[in-house]
Each structure stands twice: as structure tokens, then as C-alpha cells.
Length: 86
Image: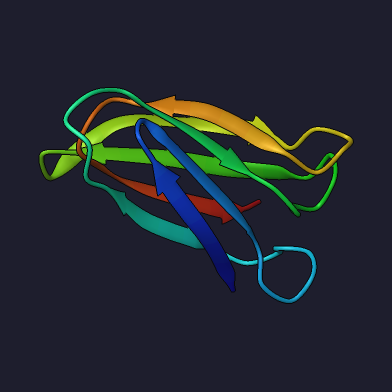
């Protein structure tokens, strides 16, 4: 479970009850690029980051959380973000 905040072109999410170790899915409503920062992730764990734009897959890539437990990326405007543990 995550909680977070969206300010200008930033989205910051963090664990509601400790470390995030499940799927994270959310919609980005901004028209311009949005910087995404996820905190409280499992350090050095691999995830599949899927960015869906306009109903079709825009980007799908394997990402690894930093040793500090953060994940940082940019999403292109209005899109759906899906982060799944590998």
C-alpha cells in the first residue's frame, strides 16, 4: 500500500506501512513530463516498469531500486504507471 503527493510535475510515493513490496499502479494526469520518485521500496530489488500511454504500451523495462530504497524515473505526460516485482 502506498501514499503520496503530486505537486507540479512531480509525483512522490512512499510506503504506508513500511517497505513497498507489491505491485504499484497509478495514473499520471499531467500533460507534460512528470518526474516520479518512489520511496520505501525494497533496496536493490528488480521490478518491471511499464508505462502505458494512450491505451498502448509506451515503455517497458527492467529497473533496479537503489540501495537506499528509491526508484526515480520520468513519465511522458498523461499515462498509466505499473511497477511489478520480478
